[in-house]
Length: 179
Image: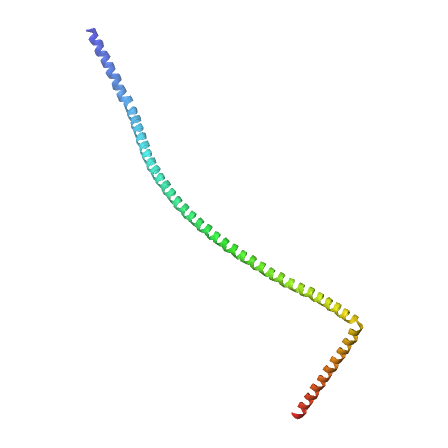
């Protein structure tokens, strides 16, 4: 029977320890468990909000990428148009410059042609004068030619004087008859 009393005493002591632990130890453990559950619930809510923010951020990122691609396409198209316009302007300028250089070249050729003609006329005139002088000297070197030339020159002067006299007389007669 002793064993039963000891067994009941041990059981009573065990129940008393369990009751004491339940009475003093359970509330802090329950509080700690509630706090831990609350912390876990908050962490889950935070994780859920973080997932939502992440989804929103990814959506905003995708939208930003789409906008950037659209803007890049617009910029690229504008750059192509600008490049085409610049090429056309440069082509127009080059054509105008070619035309201006061509015109200046033609003007320069005309000026050189006129300069050459002037130089040739001066040279030919000088050569003609020199040749005429030489011919006259050779012609007058012979004595008979000299006196014949002087006589012919004097005859021409008399003929010119006689015509001038007739012209003056005819002019005076016409002036008297008209008055």
